[in-house]
Image (cartoon, rainbow, N blue to C red; front, top):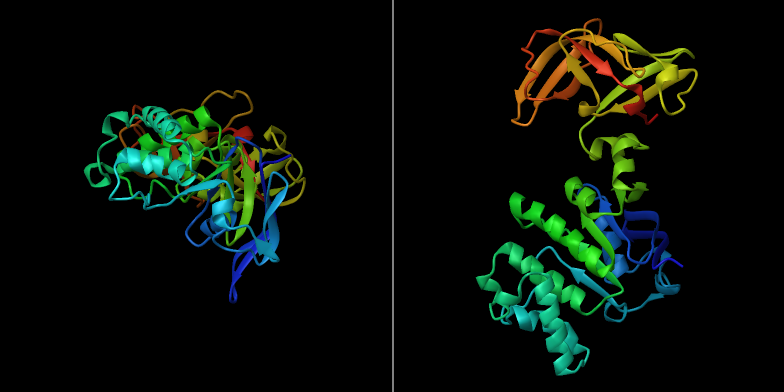
Length: 356
């Protein structure tokens, strides 16, 4: 039995459909992120799971028990869930230790047990030496650790996180991504994580549900989402990509200025008609001389239109010599091609994802 299940869940606010027929299942101990742009419905979905918002249609179940439906909902405080907000919401007038102990004390747990569990939890999040500090004396990352400790120490059935790293600077965000995943691997709490940051979702998640206009467009493991997007939106939202439109005639796929043999593609490509492929910038290789044919890779003559040096790599914009389509491609810092230079772009059809 799944730990958490959303079946046909929708939510309307007047004439606005914020969540549209969402189906989602989480197994016990699974970490799933809801990823998408602002206004896509991910926070509304999280708030329905938490019990702060009732669905207009559909149901939410945990361990087979209905928590929410249009007929009624279990109150948030009876759902055995913990939620971490963007603002952390830790009590400013309590010390770190008191904040972490708060939920245990509300549950009337014995003082000795509270002390033991708080001590263990603070050690896990590397905050035991700051137990007597107040939130105003902590950094943003330390406050986030306190919020995580307070949420996990009560041993919830489900942990909910609503863009918890959005208030941190870039370096701290990167550090806390791994910290959240480390804590999940230690405690195995079923987790729903809302974010608009694809890097956060990729680092932390077992699966990612990409949302757009209130619907889940695709849910999959991070690597599968990146390499095998099923829609144009997913391909464009997860990392950078090129969209190449072509036409299949049964033997080859003709693009603007070049063609690739249909037999070289890993996935079935329609024998006839229009096609659209997602091609990641790093999945192609830019060379000065035409490379030898290998593994079905196809070289195409191109002209370098733009370039930017990013330290770890070059970011080039090229176009086929016989076409007008612009293509972004990345190259190692040692592969220096001036603007206007003629080069060869090597395609690997197996890394081109068919999305239409």
